[in-house]
Length: 214
Image (cartoon, rainbow, N blue to C red; front, side, top):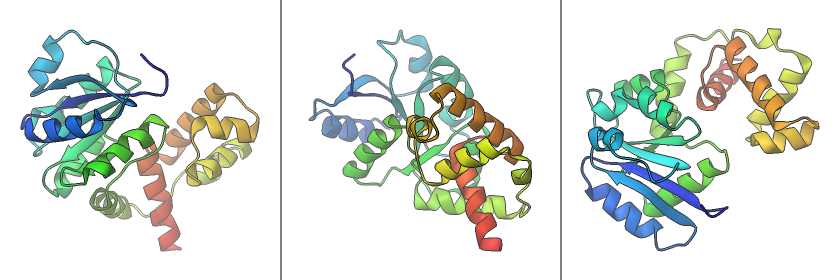
């Protein structure tokens, strides 16, 4: 696989969305489609042609098999970023998907240019979350206003936390703090554990809610 290329995977039971997105993105040499399946059964039965950087998962509702199988999909591609493409603005759906490990959300009605930008952002280690999903996460966390664990962070963990607030990627944090990327990863895991969050989206949301409560 060519360095710098964004390798994509799509699971879309409608096929309409995936056709439009793939045709748009593949006009550029910087994007390569690794696979496109119309359901999770095809995904698990097929032999993968490679590991995608980003997988777009079109999820229709809470009962959708794609959403329910996210942990298994993540197990198959542990280093891959997953984008939940939701068709309806359902708070229940967003919360359920967060619980099973989803960290990136985009509305299926977003422009093709926004979908392209999301893939590039995730490839670089950034965060992608739609305004609706962000509001849902904020409201969900507001139910527990206590920002537990922050006082238990070490000096170095607080430095890493500051970098995360600034939106820096792990590589950038490592360069700024003169530590290895692996050390950054270990600090981030410790921060997540102490602050009782499971990913960067929830961390930033919790920080935001806490700042609004002050």
